[in-house]
Structure formats: structure tokens, C-alpha cells
Image 1 (cartoon, rainbow, N blue to C red):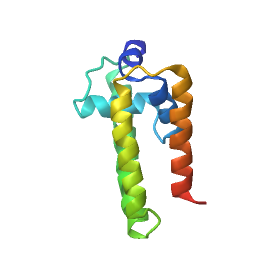
Image 2: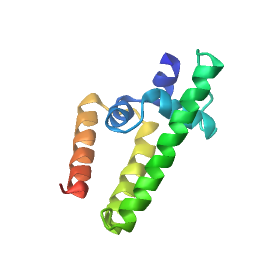
Image 3: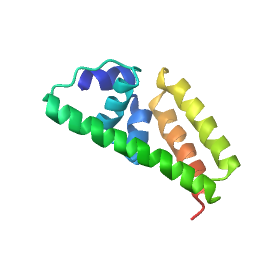
Image 4: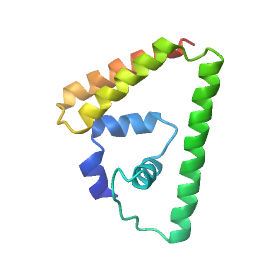
Length: 120
């Protein structure tokens, strides 16, 4: 797992994962199953497939939650636009070297935007 983290998860992604509903291992499994990365997991097949099932169920729950809250008007079209723009920025940042002092600023801006969207 250490090699994967060094190649694909910079500090910003680590911080985002910590704030997400998913563990780093679950993110790795999802990326692996979507053929976005190839990872060797040093665990038994049974443990791996249990984690695959947990990851799949969490992802399904996430999509149903988005559908629910979008349908109920909790997540508005403008909110989805902000989320899309933030996601695009993460795609760019993922492959970039970011100075440590900028990492904190980026996470802070993202956190403020998400808290404003939530509005609770």
C-alpha cells in the first residue's frame, strides 16, 4: 500500500479521503475495480472480496444518497456545479506537485465551499 500512496495519493487526496465516507483501502479497491490503477493487495482472497463488497455497497449508497438529496432539493443544480468544478481541480492537482503551504489553502477553500453548499 505504501507504494500506491506515494504514486497516486498526494497530501491533498489523503486529506480529502479522511473527510470522505471511504477508507484509503476502499478507494484503492474501487480504483482497482474500475481499472484506473493496478494494485497488489497483500491480504487473503476472502478478506479482499469482503472489502470489495463493502466498497461496492458504500458506493451504491453514495449514489442513492445523491439521487435522494438531489430529488428532494437538498442538493441544488448550483451545488452540483461547484462539486464538478472542485472535482475537476482535484483531477489536475492529483498529478501535480503542490507546495505544502498551498495544500492547506486548497483544502481550506474546498472545505469552505462544501460547508457553504451544506448550509446547515
